Image (tube, rainbow, N blue to C red; front, side, top):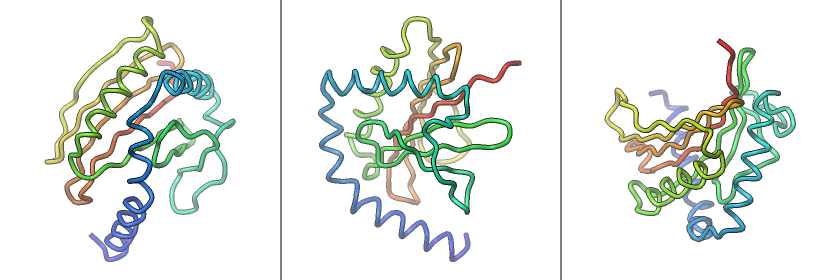
Length: 173
């Protein structure tokens, strides 16, 4: 690990805790209107997946292939679009203190709400093994237009737990 990475990770961790904790309570009380807004956002984002999210992606980050976005899912700490010449994915993260109970509740709530949003026509999958010591769980929903996943990841080195929503356009085989 280089000094630059350590410095960036520490700075990111500090900024994350300073800016995130007040937002946790807001997300934990998602009401029916916010869940409906989530469905509306997902519908639009799934449609945008076919165009590499050009309607929501803004300026490029010079250091990565990530782009800032104009649409942020309710309560998310941050959202980005990752674009490459072959594909693109929209993703949001909710950051929590390491193994916080609210992280698991958020994961369960998002998985349930997203499952309700994408409907009965979606194929759902659970779990995936990983080759590192951090814990990880995922729920995947496959629609005709996009793959939508909700994941929870414990990051020991960052002393944090993250919940991610990722929308990736379907690639024809």
